[in-house]
Amino acid sequence: MSDRVKFLLDEKDIPESWYNIVPDLPGPPPPVLHPGTGQPIGPQDLAPIFCDELIMQEVSTAPRIEIPGEVRDIYKQWRPTPLYRARRLEAALDTPAHIYYKYEGVSPAGSHKPNSAVAQAYYNKKAGVRRLVTETGAGQWGSSLAIACSWFGLDCEIYMVKVSYHQKPYRRGLMEAFGAKVYASPSDRTASGRAILAKDPNCSGSLGMAISEAVEVAAQSADTKYALGSVLNHVLLHQTVVGLECQKQMEMAGEYPEVLVGCTGGGSNFAGIAFPFLGAKLKKQKDIRVVAVEPSACPSLTKGRYAYDFGDTSHLTPLVKMHTLGSTFVPPPLHSGGLRYHGMAPLVSYCLQHGLIEATSVHQLETFQAGVQFARAEGILPAPEATHAVAATIREALRCKAEGKARTILFNLCGHGHFDLQSYMDYFAGKLKDYAYPEAEIAMALAGLPSVPVAG
Ligand SMILES: *Cc1c(COP(=O)(O)O)cnc(C)c1O
Picture (cartoon, rainbow, N blue to C red):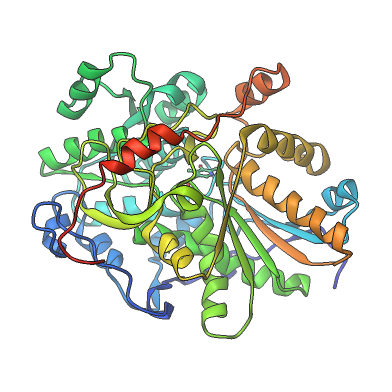
């Protein structure tokens, strides 16, 4: 084991293919269903909103999918990303644990999101699409798609969750600087937005609502497609560059992680780092404990139901089987905008259901406390979403200390918090609070789950 702090790869070490976990799973994941018929959908059902190559990736059972040269060339702008050993955090915690983190904050948007945005823009451009429409929470996905569209000469239209639009004005500025048009959601530009506003003119918005607006716009014009920043199989696939690089870097460090931690909103950064390691676990090569961390106020994995549900509030999407809090649930206005989603990626949900991973939740104040402790030790300010992974890692490291065990822990520092300083300032001013688990609202939303004719 070396005494190094930073583990860097060369451009040539950027993976040549993405890793698809599907063929390694113990059985096929439940099919996606048509909400009208309750029958499995075919590729043609998705064609109005996604281009063909992305639909093929969505249903692929190939073990590897080649990363196109043009996408790898753009990845070179910031990839491979560094892996760090958190020596100063270890010292601050006085833990025998070895803590490593993969830092995705070096990308143009400051998070892992461009890994998929670039791939999605590439395939859509190749398919002759002129414009991409999407939703964004905190603005990470929106700024990622904005720069990706700029690189491929596509127009970009973004529906940004209203509470984040006001909490994070500089994210909107970045999206506009990258050339995108940004609207606060719910908006009066779509039928779904107008219907929501008619019921609640002061609605603070949610990812589920913004998805409805973006899907509606995409479905209405032939030259426009929709792009989703998380949840879907092809998005998780694109994010596996993170874990594949990590495997090489952990080898450089001469260690193998015993515990792997990632925060979960829709599941993409978590799957990105975890799936290649889970692949090794499924092939019985190397065991590992994998922990997904979510906000206690939006706890889809720890308190949600594993059931078929819609991906959006207005029920325009197909039905997917996932851990869900109900598609009409509007999460409290947490500062981790990227984690305010009612559902979870079907593949991540499947892994939890089959005992391949664990899930835990953390309240907002503990996450900011962890974020500040991390920043003061390591000199990197984590995004509020990423502080969930930091908090769970600190819990694990303190457990190592209590048990006198020197475990190796790896977590995904999926983004920096430079656009989230207002959240940190509110935290320092004592203005942040923990939101109680919204039991009644979730019960109501779960009562409205769609009934499906086939057992999933
Ligand atoms: C979008 C985002 C998330 C949540 O999305 P996942 O798909 O669960 O990764 C988490 N962290 C950051 C920094 C994000 O930008």
